[in-house]
Image (cartoon, rainbow, N blue to C red; front, side):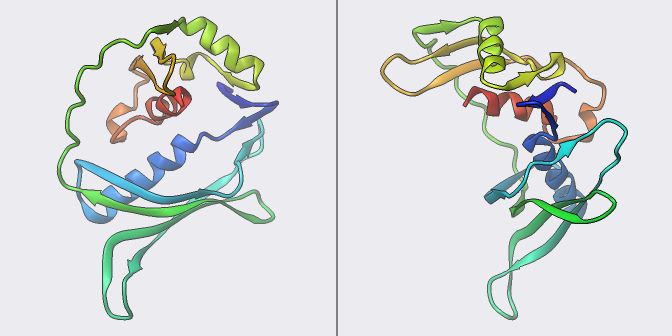
Amino acid sequence: RDHIIGENAVFPFAGYVAMVGEAIRQTTGVQEAYALRHILVNSALLLTEGHPVEVMVTFRPYRLTDSLDSSWWEFTVASHNGHAWTKHCTGQVKAVSESPDESEAQEPLPRRLGSRKCYETMHKAGLCYGRQFQRLEDISSGTLQQVAAAKVLNSKVGDEANYHLHPVIVDACLQLL
């Protein structure tokens, strides 16, 4: 209900990222991080109140040759609506055994944008984020370059321990784009 695109409740892309992250953690046992590449989103997963959808992630080693596998894994996220399967997202993932470097503090960018104004503008464009998905604060952008920065509010939603990085936080980072 808090992730409406146009007039539809849409399962967030960040949810696919979280599923694949959990799958690679369970497959490899590596807890620190994971990397993604060659991501293709084929079809949105539309959600309808009262209509359950089965979602499945499939994994297989990415083959380099007939006898040699890569450290990468190919994945597919698909759903079944009771009648047919739909492929939503494909790509490759690998476990990374070192934590990402801390980012450097960045100089504030010259153009400031209030969070309320930002989300009102997105709403007018058909990106309707409810309270759970409104996580951007202190938004700023460049005037000559296409750059933006923001703080991402990490309000606890209760299940953070189940994720490398909670899908709502990943979604907020994508919103900044």
